Each structure stands twice: as structure tokens, then as C-alpha cells.
Amino acid sequence: MKTRFSAKIIAFAFMASSIFFFSCKKDETPPTPANSQVEILPGNGVFITNEGNFQQGNAKLSYYFYSGTAYEDIFQPVNNRPLGDVCQSMAFIGSYAYVVVNNSGKIEVIRPIDAQSVKTITGLSSPREILAVSSSKAYVTD
Image (cartoon, rainbow, N blue to C red; front, side, top):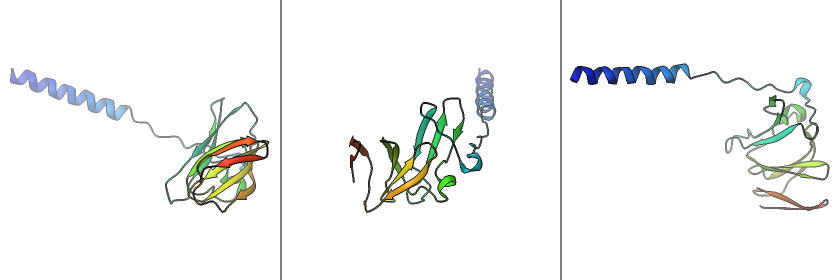
């Protein structure tokens, strides 16, 4: 009886460890935009705001094409500077995208088609969300 019980435990341990080792797969590195440019056309995909680590300044703005291609960071290659610390949210107002960067206390105004920064709104302490109420007015939680 004890031998049978021990054999079951050994068989279970072997199967569990096999599943663990054979299910692992190396993560693929997402591509970066060629020539520091990504042409983003309306309806072809979605923007993804990546907060990054608090106080590390490694927030990123990514873009996922519905075809399956994803670019991990579209802001830094185009603007030659990082996005900032804790990318909180993003909203489209008129023909621009407003990217709220919480711990950096700013809002990056970018052209959605190529992620080129047009303006940086500063003087905020800890912005989080932005809501457009018209084409020329928005509210920001701070």
C-alpha cells in the first residue's frame, strides 16, 4: 500500500514539473519603429499607455495594430526623449492626443498619426485623467 502511494506521488511530481518546464517560452522583444516613425492611421489599431515603474521615468506609449504588430514605445524614438514617469491616461481632443503623465506633472500633446510632441503642458502637481467637454476645453483631475 505504501509503495503504491509513493509511486503516485512521484508520478504526480514528475508530471507537474514536466508541465512547468515545457510550458515556459522566451518572451519576444517587441519591434521598435523603423526610422523612428510609425504611421498610425485611424481605425488600424489602439494606443496603449504603459505606466512604467513609479519614480523610474520609464512610462511608454505603445501602439497595437489590429493586424497583430505591436510597437512597444512610439514616443521616445520620435521625440528623442522619454515620455516621463507614470503615464496615467490618454484622450483625443480635436486632431491631437493628450497623454497625461502623472508623476512628471505634465500632459504631452501629440499628433496621433506619428506620436510627435506638439506641446507639453506643465505646472500640474499630479494629473490623472482628462475629459474633453468641447473642442477647446477639457477638465483634468489633479
